[in-house]
View 1: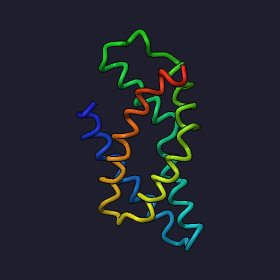
View 2: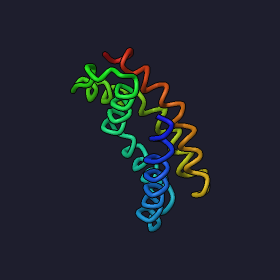
View 3: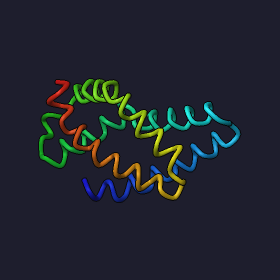
View 4: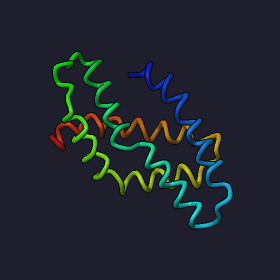
Length: 124
C-alpha cells in the first residue's frame, strides 16, 4: 500500500491539483472556492474508494472477497463522508498554497485510508 501511495498517488494528485488551478483560475470569489472544493471531492469518488478497497483486498490476500460489493461499499462510504470531505478539501484547495496541497491531501488521505478500511464493516 505504501508503494502504491508513493507512486500512483504521488503522480496523480499533484497533477490533478494543477489541473484544478488551471480550470478555476478565471473564476472569482465564492464560485472559485466552491468549484475547487467540488472538483477535489469529485476526484475522490466512489471509484477511487473502490480502487483503494481493491488494493486492501489484494494486499491482504483476500482475493475471493473482491466483487461488485466493493462498489456499493465505496458509494456509501463516499456519500457519508461528503460533509467531512467538503471541509477538508475546502481547506486544502483554498487555504493551502499549491506547493503544500499534496502534503495536506496526503495527510487527509492517510486518515481517510483508515476510514475506507473500516467502510467494509460499516457499510456491508
